[in-house]
Image 1 (cartoon, rainbow, N blue to C red):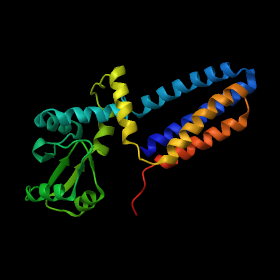
Image 2: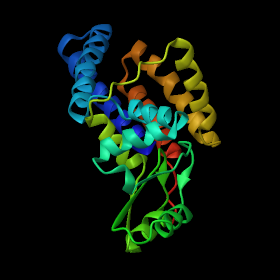
Image 3: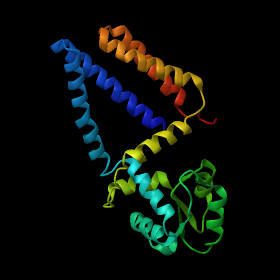
Image 4: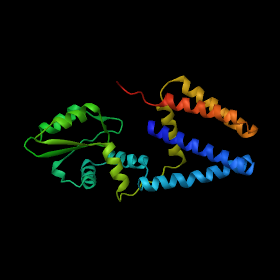
Length: 230
């Protein structure tokens, strides 16, 4: 989530810079807003084109679809992505919110003794202990193909991107996203404060309101960043 917030903050800063440029050039607030918005759309599209055929969210949706589908089909699709023999592939049917643990890595290693390599694949992320343990095991060596490894492969593959959800699905995802946000009051206050200051700036044209709004939104983004474990 932190990377998404960083990218959104950079896009907002770019839009504000373009807005100030167009405002200085044409002197019209509505025209400057429209031109800055129009310039940001091709930038986002070009970024998606260079990063992959589909977005990371769409690739995660493909993994989630495999997780809910038959395990044999998921194993086959992941084997094609990794270009490995299915005999050396161990598929763990997990929900996206779960994680591959050190116990999963150890069980896969112990049940495949005598082989040269085993690949542990799952449609979720692996925790740090699982990665550390996988690097220490031999005969067989254990490789982890979790969501962090599979999502970029899916984006570069020929797999068709899932269709965008309708309005009802988008509203449901939005409600779930807000419900999953951390219960920290400062971020809500900062978002509300920034959201109220932006229309004031558009009405008055005073850059002080824009700076205050950006500062409030920046503080809200910092509050939402996941805390790193030491």
